[in-house]
Length: 399
Image 1: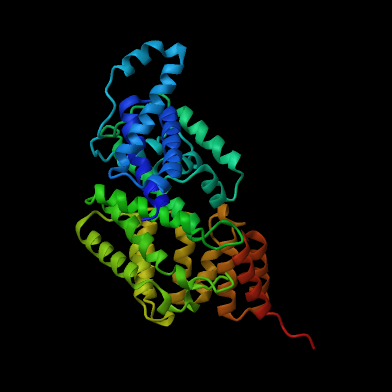
Image 2: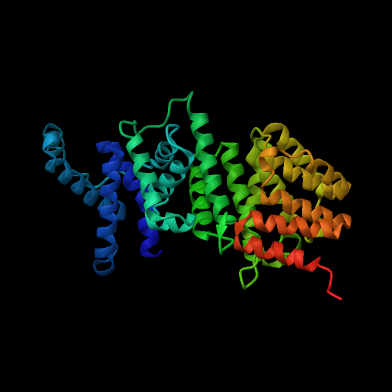
């Protein structure tokens, strides 16, 4: 394992140990960052210690105590801490679930939850998070600082049983957002931000190991695996988008498909059905089709109807519209698009779906206009290139 991977994997556990021991999330997070920096300087020459976690906790604890001692206003607390023995060695307590729950505290905005989760649990630096989301590093730094300030005084403990389901829902939502931004970047020159989708899968896998009986955790992990399995075929060597029907399915990741399919099959048979499980089931149907023409669209339509009844939303309706068109013809899909949620009126996916269905229906001129509109509405360069390519293919040759 590379040094960077060792440090990243240990960071959440080290932070959890410090917050549990000293409280004050903000100060503990700073101490952990300094310990990680010290390790990145010392370990390449001295070697990775036998117990990296204990080494990091010891160094971070010393730094935390030094800060406490330097604060005159906290003299009493300094005296209480100074008599405590150093954590040698630290017990291997896995508090990653507690840390995830804390990062997704309901007092934080979704953007802050995402940034803090990637920093504290994922171990990404502020600069890495900023580059992944294509925003200034100062912006991410401010989000993290505000989030940590809001968490002052928050207990480092799992929420009470009556609050746990809602907090777990928030955690899953944050992980889902991180994965989606990594799998299909909302803006920029690259379709993928692999560091985000990879981190989302790692954190969700970790969550599943701790909560194996939670059906929606398993469903989300299966959804990520089945979706990410197609990533190798989603772009050309030049980075241009390749739509699902045109992908070389031999390039899909068979191991991820097998793991995701087995996971969702087991979960659907043993746990109450939820939205992430239904989305995973849809992804499995796509992945199990040997060719695009072999896709079982009737089963997909049935699953989308069930998903819309359990977790309605504009994007679910839009995806169901596509399934309707594939089962009952493009005219049926176009009729449903006329009644699409107004909040999606200017979304590029609506225009792209309309263009595709118009093309299938033979209305070439209208399809071309819709592709061009979709290209203007998206901020993703690969999507813009694909949409312009589709429009150009429908442009009549000049006499």
